[in-house]
Length: 194
Image (cartoon, helix red, strand yellow):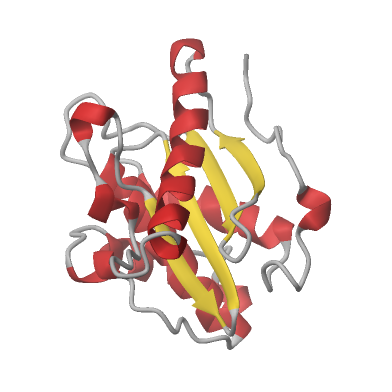
């Protein structure tokens, strides 16, 4: 089944200025552009040209999932896996932020455990007291994470809300800087910067 441009979403009506200070359509465009630009960046064989996965936005204050949206053509045998992983990463990061205050995580990579099926790909950002967790699953996990870093950084730039919390992954992820540079110079993104 071709899922491109279809939304399997929950709680889109809850996406308002109190939850996250960005428009749903803008976020979907940004994720789609990031996904296109991520194609070919991975060094993992047989995954370097993938363009697929699920994006999840979680309310960092309440732990409720605002929505989970598919992108690209997801193989039937991977669909449920990517959906669940996208949500699991976000919920696990929320847990480490709110339940383990002495171990404050800003990336799901910090609680990664491959043997238990727990991977990186979710990041935490604070937009002027609007806590958000962005998560993606479907690409190699460092690419998932790099896309979410770029999304968080760009939304901060365009909304004038600073990212208060330092994202741990920024210092370690090898893909996000070049992806972010290409993203900001993309023909669909340049107008948002003006």
